[in-house]
Image (cartoon, rainbow, N blue to C red):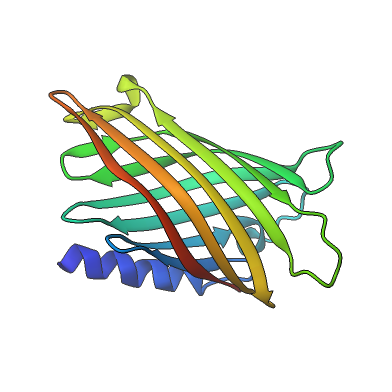
Amino acid sequence: MYIKKLCITSLLTLGLLHAQSNIGLNVNNEDLEVGASIDLNALTYYSDSTSYTLDASYLHTDGDNLATVGVSAESTFQGVEGLALGLGIKSVFADDFIAIPFCAKAKYTLPFNYSIPTTSLTTSLAYAPSVLTFSDGESYTEFRVEADMEIITNVHLFTGYRNINTEYDTHDQTFNNSFYGGLKLSF
């Protein structure tokens, strides 16, 4: 219980630190996820077309917990307006399971006019083979797809789907396979 409180408090604190950072909460009938992202460019006063971020999340499912911390770089894709691609690495911690997956992300901001709020579609994939999976783990795979709409300046509603698979030495486990919805605040 102490670790859960510490993770949630840390994520809330991280989300409030700097501009262009965000904190979000998503839920469904069985799961709760808190996530935060810090823009490292603003933290270090670095200005470039590539955006570096530090991400952290905590997912509580029915009896299981999963925490992640990662760093990524994201930049616009030349030739396709509204498309941004990102690559990174993160650490994943669960019961008797530790992994360091590589991550890839694509975000497309839909070209709506000003009468429709800013809307984007995001998909991400994270994978850790056995060489990057420790404790009782054998491999880790995570897939997400998400739709996000900025309904008020710096306030986003989003919905998505996530599939997280943890392969252990003795068995495979679908850690989470669900749809969710939530709210995100940007600073």
